[in-house]
Each structure stands twice: as C-alpha cells, then as structure tokens.
Image (cartoon, rainbow, N blue to C red; front, side, top):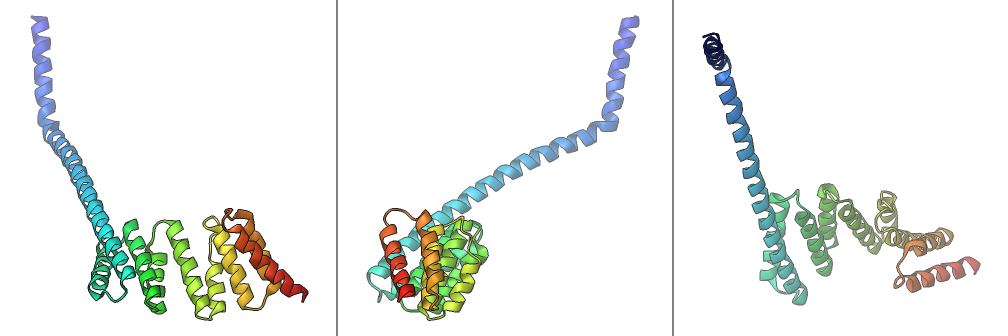
Length: 219
C-alpha cells in the first residue's frame, strides 16, 4: 500500500507540475519549432536570392560582351543597364552587385563616358563588402583621374589604397602619377616597390619605367 501511495503521489505531483508549467512548456516548444521553421525558410529565401542574383549577373555578362563586340548595340546596352540597376538595387549586399558596377564602369570607359565610369566605381567603393573589390575600384578610379589629367586627384585616391591588395599595381600607378607630376625620384622609388611584389610578366615593363625615370633624374 505504501508503494501504491508513493506512485499515486508521484502521479499527483506530475499533474500539479503540468498545471503550473504545461502551458509555458508548450509555448516554448512552439517557439522552438517556429524558430527552426523560420530559419529554414530564411535559408531557402537566401539560396533563391543568391541564385537569382547569379542568373542576373550571367545575363549581364552576356549583354556586356555583346555591347563590347558591337558598341552601337543599343538594345544590349539597355539590357545591361537594366540588369546592373536590378543587381545594385535588389542585391546590393551581394558580390554580384559590385562586380556588375565594375562591368558597367568598363562599358562606360569604352564609350568615353569617364564620369559615368567614376560613378560606378564610387558605388563599388561604398557598397562592396570584399576589400579586394573596393581596392580594384579605387585603382580604376585613380587611373581614370590620371587619364583626365588630374594627377592630384589620382594621388589622393592612392593615399587611401591598402597595399595588402594588388600592391604591385598600386605602386606602379603611384609611379605613373609621380611621373605626371614631374617627381622623378618618387616615381623611381614607387616602381622599385612595385618590382618587389610584381609577377614575372609585369617586371619588364616596370623595369623599363624605372630606368626611364632614372635616366631623367641623371639628365
């Protein structure tokens, strides 16, 4: 009988605990299930979004190739602009958007619209999450400024360069800027720094540039 009472007491204790805690336990389970389902739905959404961005970017690449193959192809240019705008507007936090802006900057340069190219590159520098893309945009913007005859603006841009990325290209461009500013000694030093990290294919041109400014220093 004592054993029976103990079991009855245990059952009663469980009933009492359930009365006090059952609703909160069910709520906790429901919240846990909702979180899991919500996370799975979010992952599916992100995967679908990434796929859509990838498809848009590939279509953009095709359109840009068509434009570069036939610069007067107005329909392809309009398609490229639409796709790039979509990527920057709806997928701004993806790498595809920044690469789209870089592509459109190239298209603008080909068309001789350097201000439009600078605008695209500024967008990359502001929105890109990858530092490599930011640096690439900065380098291209500096080259455009130098091509426009504004060596001072190019130098200012390069002051913000991060030499962990494209160090050889950064220093080569610095050398070009110094040459444009008539600063031969600084140009030679920049080319020498570029040679320290340049690949084998780039070295002959860098050595030629260095030697030319060295000759200029001596004359």
